[in-house]
Length: 543
Ligand SMILES: Cc1cc2nc3c(=O)[nH]c(=O)nc-3n(C[C@H](O)[C@H](O)[C@H](O)COP(=O)(O)OP(=O)(O)OC[C@H]3O[C@@H](n4cnc5c(N)ncnc54)[C@H](O)[C@@H]3O)c2cc1C
Figure (cartoon, rainbow, N blue to C red):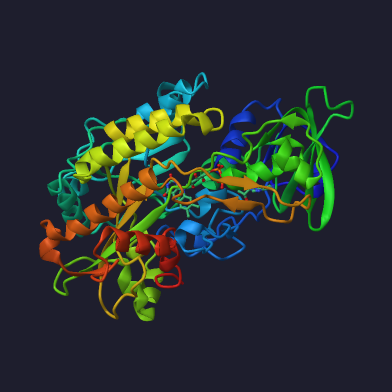
């Protein structure tokens, strides 16, 4: 139940969950199924319940830069991207990033989930993943008419139908999407076999976290918080920023760390709540390391700099950071092509009209076109790049921190055999550096790197919990594997304009644009535009 500070301060709970995002609310709902188990969730952001800016489905990017929805983190300046820093948006508020994400319901390859277990984490395998994800899903397939129009076939697919999270295809799907999909198939990326069941290689239309009855976003709040909020044993306190975990008082340097309570800040005052069983830190990948480090859990070298005594020597905290980097390529559509893209919302009157069209119109569309390819499917240079990456890894094998060589071996195997080159079609312009032309419509392809070799860090830089941690992704520092693959992916996406039916639908490439031709020029452009694509959507299509 939504809690007040009096329900929480100095009170004891079986479990305290730090961070009420996707993972935190899911876990809170699950643990509190047992009426004898008390659960407290502490969330730094606001509740934002019923806020149309969150609920309106195709509101991608509209939350970016707004502190009521997003943390607006900024990375350190990146040498490889021209000494600039990059904005990292993450959801702030109940539901976390599930309240601002792009609603796409896609799944990883089974093999990649099994790799967690192969790296020494028993139970972290596809079989378990699928069991629990089916429990989460409530999938409604599209009508037979839509299936026929979009040549969809779900015979092989298996999704859960009784879970709390509503999964569906968005209400409005333009038939232009089918032509885009056909282009990718004609480019050699045939239909994926069972993309919801671990066989993701190829092209497919993905469903969204979308409530078909209300035409609103389905997310951690609608699936896990609202249906359970009246349980007396489930308390959720918002605007509660967790500072640190406090161990039991008899804790000294040599004894085991036992989490006894959680210190948090609420409206400028610091309070504690006590945990009888466990404290779970689920503040997202970017903020979790800070809570651990301020609690004395982490790399002693980092903690020493902060003046915090090491309680648990855990060097992995805040290391091994990998970013799902993306960049977009955009093509201008011919004026006579029928395809209602988000570009038309640039006109204020059209925007107003579509905002009023609740239950239809462009805000009930979604990002549905996905393709996953192997490097050899998209580039004649695949063998040479993989060989160069292997040589580099073997040359430096003795210098890697523990566990990294094992990860790299798996990544090299994936680079050779698996479909890690991701292409996402986007109905509209979402790229840099060239601005859209007035009155024109665009089709874009996000190019996303899934097998990242560069490794970054996120560490607290002050004892003060209000000071943001330092986030350094080390973008493209592993030049061979990351940059060369990236360049080949951009080239593949650019070439889609020469393939039917897109060839007949488009006039010219807007971005990266005709001035960018050589590999060096592509590299220079992607340096400048990496990670900024989504930023473009903001302010152009949104209220
Ligand atoms: C812009 C964007 C688009 C995305 N699009 C998609 C998509 O289309 N499909 C998809 O599958 N995935 C997408 N993702 C990723 C997906 O949303 C995340 O992987 C997922 O939400 C992560 O869940 P989490 O629980 O780990 O973190 P989050 O959901 O981010 O939750 C962390 C929570 O902890 C809170 N918190 C942080 N620090 C503290 C603190 N000190 N004290 C208390 N609370 C704290 C935060 O406010 C937040 O609510 C997207 C992510 C973003 C940012």
